Image (cartoon, rainbow, N blue to C red; front, side, top):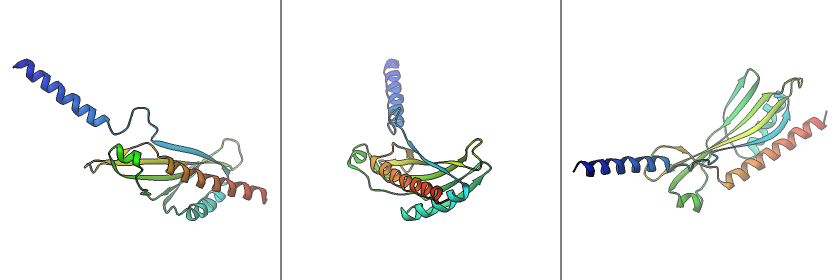
Length: 159
């Protein structure tokens, strides 16, 4: 009787751990970063907003930090791929952040990169958990980053 209770308790704990860890495979990349280029802070603010609007990203807030700035966009809710549906994901969303960090000794120049984080809801759960970035989201962010890089380069050449 005592052995049966121990086995039952062990199986219950194992099942709970398995269910809790099944959301994101170990080693999966849940954040996608791409380097855009170099710009002044004025160009970063002006051109980033212009290209975000062109790509239909809605700006949620802009934060000025001591040595740079961040532009956070509102969540995007793309459709679910077949692969995500097979994993049990019923809803996904991602957020794009554009970040400018001061370059050391570069005389007012900032290194710009785009950072994307993806979240999903599994089954009947209402909790958002980190999930890997899907290929469609990566393509959309790469297209945005390429356009922004082109704008930065064109602005530099026009001087």
